[in-house]
Length: 67
Image (tube, rainbow, N blue to C red; front, side, top):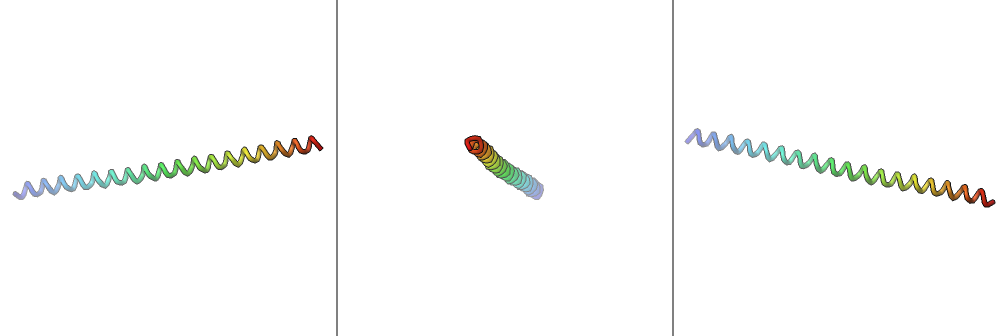
C-alpha cells in the first residue's frame, strides 16, 4: 500500500507542476498579446499623428503659395 501511495503522490505532484507550468505559459502569452496590442495601438496613433502633421504642413504650404 505504501508504494502505491508514494506513486500516487508523485503522480499528483507531476500533474500539479505541469498545471503550474501551463498557467505560467498562459500568463506569459497574455502578457505578450497585451504588449503587442499596446505596441500596435501606439504605432497607429504615432502614424496618424505623423500623417496629420504632414497634412498640416502641406495645407500650410498651399496657403502660403496662394497668398
